[in-house]
Length: 82
Image (cartoon, rainbow, N blue to C red; front, side, top):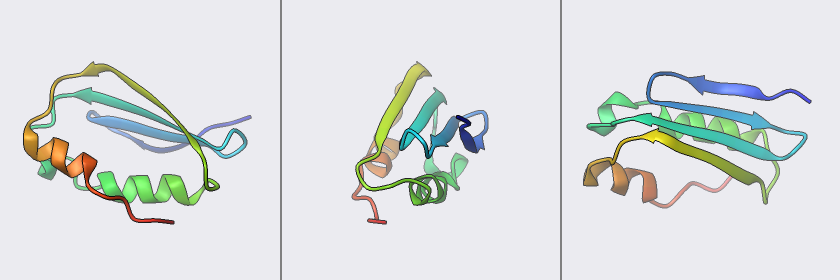
């Protein structure tokens, strides 16, 4: 069973396990604006396109710093359905 790495940068890591139908998401550090994570939504689209409906999500926020309101709104906006 092997995970597929979608993105691994200094702000976040996204990987998927199609066998487990699962996304692994790690948030790292402080995101001062959406401009520092320009590929974030596209990385999520890519990750979820490899999985079936009803996938599970494992999130590691142990290295996350509190984000400003702009980032919180960006992360909580409605998702595109796959």
